[in-house]
Structure formats: C-alpha cells, structure tokens
Length: 274
Image (cartoon, rainbow, N blue to C red; front, side):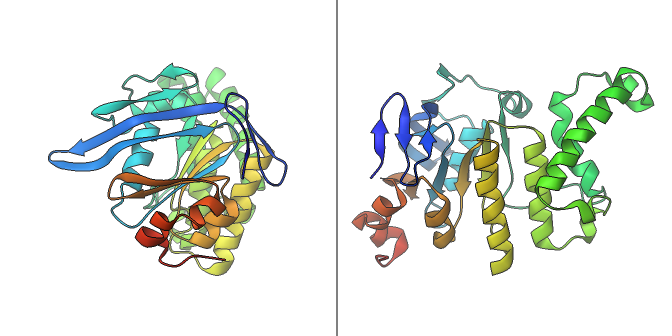
C-alpha cells in the first residue's frame, strides 16, 4: 500500500517521495464516429512517478496516451494540467508545456544522423529565425552550439556516443528505440510519454531500456507515463498502474493491487501472480 497524502503526493515502498497531481483526467470519453474508444475514465498522474497504462489490444491505451499528449481532444470530460483546465492545443503547443513522447511505431528521420535526429527534439527551445538558422551565423550559430552541447549530454547519458554520426536507417531496432528516447529527452520534458518502449526488443535490450527509464525518472525527476505489454517490466518499473479494457477503466493502484485485482486477472492477466 502507498502512504498517501491527497494534496502532497505519496511515499513509495522504496522511500521515494512522489509529488502532487501533475495532470488529471476527469471523466474522459473519446469517440471515433460511432466507436467509443474511451468511456468515462478518470485518473491522475503525479509529479515524479512512473505511471503505467496497461490492457489487452484494443483497450484504448494509445488513444488515452494521445489524449494526454493533446493529439486527441475528448468529446466529454476534461484534462487538467498544472492546476488548470487544458484547452484544445496543437501538438507543438503541448510540447511547449513540457510534454514529450515516443511512439509505438518508431518515428525517426531515417536519412538523418543520430545527432541530427536528437537535435530536432530541441526545436521548440530555439529562438533564432529561419533565415539566420539557414545561414548559420550570429545568434543562430551560438544558439545551435548551446543546444548541441545539451544534446551531447543526452547522448552520453544514453550511451550512444559510438553511433552519434550514423544514419538512423543503418541502426538495429533496439538502438533506434534508444535514439527516439534521446530525442524526447532532448526536449527537457516534465512529463515523458512512452508508447510501448520495449516492443520488439530482446531480453538484453529490455534490460537496458528499463535501466534508462529508471535513470531518467531518478536523475531528471521526470514524470513518466508508460504503455507496455511486458508485465514483468510494468510490475518492476511502475509506481501505479491504470488498467483498461474495451475503453473502460477496470483497475487502478499499485502493481501489487492491480496484480491481485480479480477483474484485472480475468480480463487481462489471466492468472494471479505470486
């Protein structure tokens, strides 16, 4: 059980202090024509935690992540972020509020180098105009040097120095996933959304990615929202878990609480885990 404090956050079993509410989903309903992807779901995300969203295929997890990221706007319900009701925004506006994400299907620029891909994560933080950037002089040159210094720190952090100049198209799948994580981190997000970051990885790659996710959360105090099908990863990494099934919320709590929830076992886990 968590030592909960409604307004101040909670203390995890390993003694980490989680902050107050960063974002709250209030009675979210999302429809695509006659199809209800999300039906009347409410939950919160707290500063500094790793919050997982799980469920079978078609449960509405990615749709929920798109609502959190601002890409989808629900027909019913409200999204509250940093204490304010969030209005409809364009993706770049959401990014400027401190939210970054990776994608279920890798979305990198295959013909560009690793370094250049990660640099695109800094675009919202750059102030120089298009012409000065294109000519690379004055303020634009100084600004790019500053941003490149930040990117190099991300490259070192994720241990991808050896591929920094390699075109992404030449990389194996696991390293592409790490580059996508690096690009998201380059934006210096307060909340990082990860859509199936372990999908398609072997055991060693999953172990590496799990370590990096924990390090990002710990060293940068980044709040992480995670969709993942590997239950071992979810139970090991997450502080709290939301479980969805057919667009509805059927569970919400600590990994142990979710693991022992009969409705969750029946709908998704299949068997109770000791």
